Length: 73
Image (cartoon, rainbow, N blue to C red; front, side, top):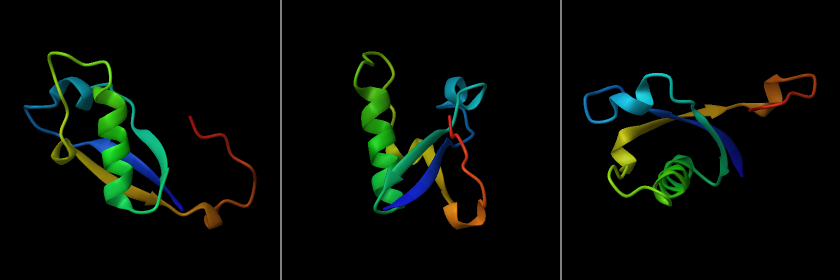
């Protein structure tokens, strides 16, 4: 498993989450799984605006570069 930061793509469809919306830190096997988990999490209580995997991009977090414990929120 690896650590990923899932971030909203900028653009007109997702302007609401792109402006002021937090990124999501996800532990997953790969980038696609990280994005899918984020979309599933965000859509679980949505009725009007459903997110798609294409609304997000992902950035890997290299945990080995941190020499001290770190809180990720």
